[in-house]
Image (cartoon, rainbow, N blue to C red):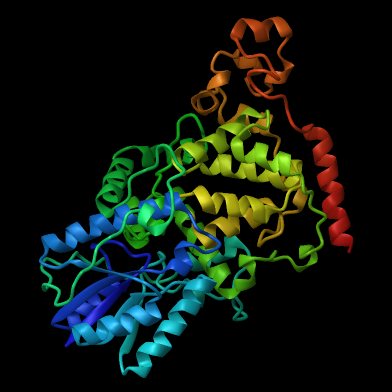
Length: 462
């Protein structure tokens, strides 16, 4: 009997429960990936992330071929392509890794219904998150968690499965594999200058490098922007190039593992509150906040021209690499929603366009967190960040800002966080005249903070 393994966000060979389960029960296994235009061209369309995914597919195909198999690629909706492929291959079962996002669940339900009509068995397997089933982690009253700390305590007590080895041999596919298209053939374009390369091989190289040293100082350095002590594994976790369960097992560092728990938490939240994909979790703020609609300010934020060096550095890192340091993500998110008073959904949309690790659950969760409308018990005024003070704390020597905002490289340290305070003669000497070489601040932070406080008070009052 033949089985299909429907790949989605599990593009790896090692610790792959769906693949291992199929191989344990069936003589022949066909691994398939469906390029679904509705997903590729939908509201979260992204050239950079799709290019990363295509690289992941090429890497996976090479690994499968080394073992005698091949990746089968089909372009079209899976509810149409999988039944056809099952008939071609004589498959009676489909194995897949479960997902939690609203679109993934709807697509899975549609596809499952069609497959069952054809008498094909479906087997959902773990592998997306550290804990096998984050959706079943409930409070003592049987309710889903909406606060991270108690979720984290319950999450730590969940059983963990054993890691699974990569299969040594696979059977040759009996169907035409198809080809992996180029980004241009999919009608998308790369918008990022210097992105990370996709694939399991690169994921494992980065994980090994991180575990060889940086993880030891993770607690002290992961928030320091200039040192960049983060793992940069998020794109690889998003596409399943490396198993989150394996990362937890090998890391052993509780501070780093806590970040994996945050990832599981936001998957838990989105599963139980699918409306969060488009609406605020906190009902009192739904359609209640009087957001500004300043298109020029939004454009300046997107392009890294706000006049606040740390904000601009973060936004330019995003445009250059398709990735941004987490501390910078919080600062730029606070600036957009609190200083500029612009709807968090516009920030979420821009991130999902450029981020190669753009994950609906985590991106949405973080944007709602920083906008003070999500599953965060802290009051809104706790999330109004002063960009200059954050730079002094997390980029004290200006290494991060100077790396991404090149026109500020020669600005003296004492003026770097607020360059508009430089005397005119200092501006001329360092070659950075505010308003000519670098913009002045598009908003006064102190005044913006007061407007933000009033905006949230008015919304909460109804």
